[in-house]
Length: 253
Image (cartoon, rainbow, N blue to C red; front, side, top):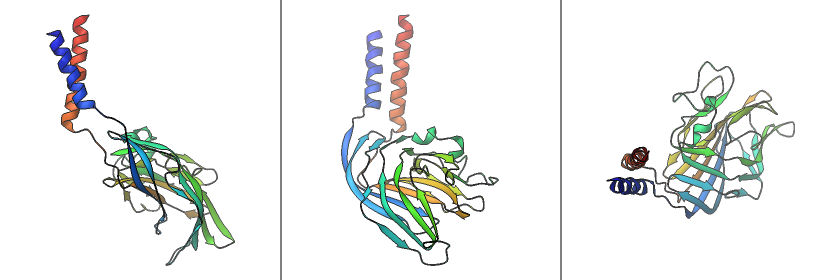
């Protein structure tokens, strides 16, 4: 009986938990949108590692090697946006990976706290997520050659989560396939949603600099990634296997 129980338990674990790492070549698009303006996008390609419901992205999968200048049209305080470099750091994203964020970085509901007098960025905390920093600086030209706000993406904690007041007031949330929101203290900035197909992550950030409120949404899309998210039946098999091994161990004592 003990042998049969052990075999059944081990089989349940194997059936429910088998996952092997596989290198996947994918095209990638990194976008950074500021204050509702059209995003600055950079394309790249390379190999990521996919293990079940976990994706590991190497540094430099997306790497801007030239200067981008984006003229701004319409009614806005921003004249132009420019960027000379933009690249991703390494990052690992897994099922429930955004749970490591600070409580203030995970929305308690679909809307951030409305009584917040300052700015806050958050996501719904669901789906696949994790932490990945960016390198590069967006130069926000309010008045050309007079007022230029340099937003250092690494210092601004974009994709990393956390808050800082140096050099500007910043609140950031990590990456998620769920809903990202920015509350500027005056209104809720446009929400951005990440998805599992195509695999798209979103990272919202609030920046207040020199009297300007700058909600920022970064997105990363991997076109060839397909995740194996455990189904309820697989989770039941894993649970059955663990319970069986625990029971076997207790009977041996």
